[in-house]
Amino acid sequence: MAILSLLFVFVVSAQTPNFNETEVTFRQTLTDLVKAKTVNRPGNEARAVKILAARLKKEKIPYLTMDFDKNRSNLVARLKGTGELKPLLLLAHTDVVGVDKQNWTYPPHQVTAKDGFLYGRGVVDDLGMAVANLEVFLLLKKNKIKLKRDIILAFTGDEESGGAGMRALLKEHPDWISDAEVGLNEGGSPVTDDKENVRYIGMATAEKSYQDFTLTVEGATGHSSIPHGDNAIFVMAQALDRYSKIPPEFRLLPVTREYFRQRAKIEEPELAKFMETIAESRGALNKKNIATLEKYPILKALLMTTCIPTMVSGGSRVNALPPVTTVNINCRILPDESIDAVQKRIEENLGDARIAVKKEGKFNLGDGASPIEGVVPSALKKLSAKYWPKAPVIPVLLPGATDSSYLRGTIHMYGFSPLYRLEQDIGRAHGVDERIPEKAIRRGIEFMYELVMEIGNTSDK
Ligand SMILES: [Zn+2]
Image (cartoon, rainbow, N blue to C red; front, top):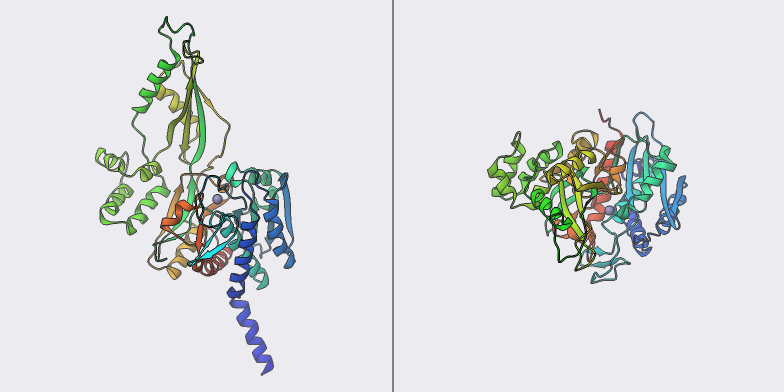
């Protein structure tokens, strides 16, 4: 009898992890991380790494920490699988954005539980996902689960301000992560209505890349009382006027086509019909669709590379002819397009060889797109159907860039955090009163655990 019941206990614990305990440790570690105040800049991500490393140490899991600047570190650990399949990377960043000039209801750098939510800077972006990844990783270890893939756990710094952490990791210790085949990072999540019913599951498969260009035109200077035909401000203004009249080039990528198709399932009838029309369109969009698109700037931006002037300067004195005029053009580039091709188009559209177009330092490069079908999308769809049967999985093209952009050339990265968030809360991530629903924690960890098990044992082919 004693042996039987012992056996029973063993079987149960091997199959069902102790999620109650995990919820407690999740909240504690999240609280510690928020308090570590890893505001970038300066970052101080070494404080977060210390907290995370202590949890790994307690379970005797080996890990690598590496400094990429003073008080700034990354952390990587790995759970060995059978080696039958290539590793799965669980990625999150530990820096958070500042709260300057933001009027928070609660102190931003501590966790406050109020009315069913946890408030604090970073609870969504990205400390919540960081801790969810950690908890799942520790559960696998405690339950002695050996998957076909190694599971790589990575925490990077400086994601919010140029990606120095990820770039340093790839440069100095590529062997710790580069053999991964697939990965999960921030970018999408289950999204709910105000009553916390999940409406859809966002899965980011691609990102726009960011690039600035400086336009410069020089003119002959002189006394402003004697104008001539070579005024650098006029030349620039006329070129920008031509540029502003060039119609945008819309095009659908696999990710945006599927986005419109799936999103149509949950929208009001009028918008749903329009989204279906776009999803099924072939070739160039017709005039009517383009006119409708004007009503939806966010949808419109998904279908084009955007390059718009954001700063202008010129002239040196109020009473002198301007020797030079410069303009900054800020581009968000679709993942199928090269920066050089974009530069060429800007030059053509300005239509004036006197204007020099210069590429500024690269901020972030969206390196291609992850396939919208494969082991991760399949696993997400399978588990979503179990957890939230009415909610479609919607592939998303992110308008901004994450650390995934450095990896997409070699690893199929997907933006998915398991913690659901309210649709109305999405703007809080870099804004005021960032929060996660308390009920999302348990659900999120359970979902992530199953997701990692599923991906960890399934081939991408
Ligand atoms: Zn983030």
